[in-house]
Image (cartoon, rainbow, N blue to C red; front, top):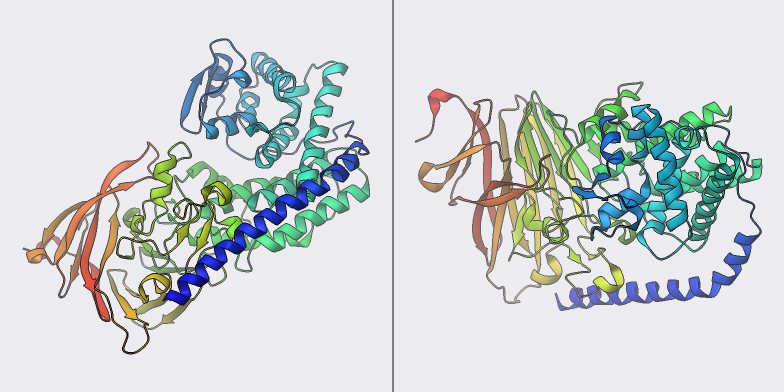
Amino acid sequence: MAGAIFKDRLRVVGFLAARGATVIWRSLGAPLRALAGLRRRPPERLLIAPQDIRTSDPTLAADIYAGYFAFAGKIVNAHGRSPFELDPDSPAWTRALMGFSWLRHLRAADTAVARANAHALVEDFLSLAGKPNQSLAWEPQVVARRLLAWLSQSPIILEGADRAFYRRFMKGIGSAQAFLERKMAEGLVGDARLLVAIALVELCLSTESTAKAQQRTTKLLVDELERQILPDGGHVSRNPQALIDLLLDLLPLRQVYAARGLQTPAQLLNAIDRMMPMLRLFRHGDGSLALFNGMGVTAPEQIATVLAYDDVRAQALVNAPHSGYQRIEAQEAILVMDCGGPPPRAFSTRAHAGCASFEFSVGAQRLVINCGSPDANRLPAREAARMTAAHSTLVVDDTSSCRFAFHAGLGKWLGDEMVSGPDAVEVERRETTAGTMIIAAHNGYEPRFGLIHQRRVFLRKDGKELEGADRLRHVEPAGSPTERRPFAVRFHIHPSVRMKRVREGRGVLCVLPNGRRWLFETTDWLVDIEESIFFAAPDGPRGCAQIVVNGQAEADVEIEWRFRHIEKKRAPD
């Protein structure tokens, strides 16, 4: 165990050393990159306006004209001032404002007032924040999102504009292009790099750019698609929301290639084709996505929009070994399980310590859930939601199976990244005539406690019984002393489900909103009902409950449990 802890600390030192080397390299190369940017001519004319397939609400145009800006769960009244002068103390709100995706609502209104307002707001931004600086408006992700919005909404921005504004607008686009290309050259990492690549290639295709520029940006895009979209169609971050966001950008980009009469890269087409069935893997019967690794509230209109472009109507993937997920379908019952380790460090800022957790639904009713990810304005809650205890799995000594930079005192240098987690996850899937079994084991608790967690789940063919077992196995050398470690097996239950302890404390009756009843029971363990919280409700966080089996692990221990559907006439005592 001591050796594993030392290895963990050595890994953190390596992270910090690599971060320092990157900073030095960027500083040394900054003058050369600045000179390169001066030699680049900004685009002079737009040829096409790419389609924005995100749904829009024309009624929001009136709110924006009245000075009310509602983004990221926060409403701000500008009181006659430019919104770009405001400081609402909400980074998420500021990023949404500066990203300009809301322009689509003004375009949907299709009124002279909305068009004039769009023109005026873009002009305000160019005057107040149009030059690169250290503010949130000039984060690479925000600049890329703004560039995509300006290109797609250019008809409403430029309608009736004079030559002076047109040139100023194009100069602003050129500044964004130069900024993003510089960031890419500096070694931008993480999911932001793919978004920037999408923005740059869409800009080249939408303007009078050279064939060489189109080839260069297309190569950037292809390289990032191959790096970030895994063979099974999952995103390297393991976040279901990432699939939705990327498809909303990649599908219009595919149309842009066709509109320009250019050959669409095969890697782009293949990535879209792989992502569709992977997205369906996460879907429950009610249409919402399973809550893993940063997934929060499901936007049903986004899911519907994306899947409308799925020409082949692909079936949901059930085995995604590269992304680390498994799915079982049996009649109306659906189980989705996290069977993977943490993503690469640069992509781990939203990842959760939920290895071996699962969600379970029956028809349109959710039963077992994870807590999900709250919105960006609830930072303390987001940190808590990433802990293992916020997931339906086993927790040892109230400790997460992954370590986060903010808990290790490294948040100043590594932000929200993970610094360690399970690096050995074994998964086995068995299909039988009676049902489907998944066996997963991870070593997330080995460095600190010398324990391996193994979970076995089996869903019967009729979808009316889910059996499971959680086992803790000691891996200490023979003869070494073992400590009594408390553990808890947690099953977070959807807030719409009513619960009652039965069977002398060894079971819990769960009543779904449609009246169907499911019984959770164990053989030799007492069961508690404790408070929990559901962060993925459309109207904000909601209180819910969780089923908890507590125990002490001083030797190998196994907890068997099951959920089974029961008829009303067979109600437990």
